Amino acid sequence: MLKQWGRVWAIGFVLWTVLALLGATGAHVYTASMGSPESWAQLLAWYVLVSFIWSLLTPPVYELARRFTIDRSTWTTALPLHLVACVGLTFASAAIVVLLAPLVTWTPEKQVPFLAHVVSRALMDFQRYWYIVFVTQAILYYQKYREREIQSSQLEAQLAQAQLEALKIQLEPHFLFNTLNSIAALARNDGLAAENMTLQLADLLRFSLDAVGVHEVPLSRELTVLQKYIDIQQARFQDRLQVEMDIQPHTLSALVPNLILQPL
Image (cartoon, rainbow, N blue to C red; front, side):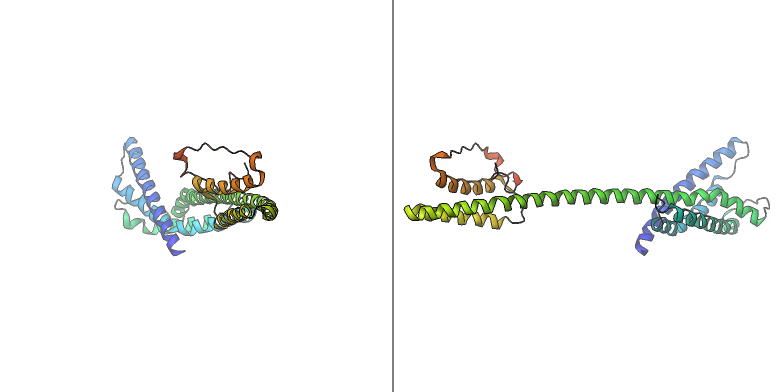
């Protein structure tokens, strides 16, 4: 958590400092246009003081916003909690700023009652708390969106794998039983053909076992497996089965889904 808070503080410090530069410059230009320009350096010192205080408050506010998100199901609890935290932290930061202001300003200011100065400062800083909350909410929503995308892609991959495994389960037993029956029939009349088919079946099964859990294979390997399958089928059906292949050599290294050709 400390590492994360350090990163949040650093990001907050940079952003609040940028806003301080813009605020000081804007205030200087405004006072100059009114004919009584204030020192840009003194304005910057004041704005940087406020920004530094809020950079220290950014990590705890971030943690509150992360733990108590405001959505349809939680807003009745989260919103009152954030309102209380906003008032408490804003007034606390305003009191600190008012106390430290004399240390960073060198032009005498009109004497303003401490409480009135704190209330004025707090009213100007209320939006800072909600800036942090809204940015945190946006980050969390984006993270949830990305997580849902990743989960969706994982589910799609699992579904594709399940469909592929189901296809294998459907194809292999049916093919295996037919091949074994063919081997038994050949054994009675042609022992050499039965032996060749047995060896081809063993090669095909070895290829299948080696590819368990593999989703993509080179086209050349897929064609080798397919040829084993075709050899067995041709031994069964002989002249009734004719297969022609027209394969471009540059495609042999391409990755294809495992067992994509056998169903065709």
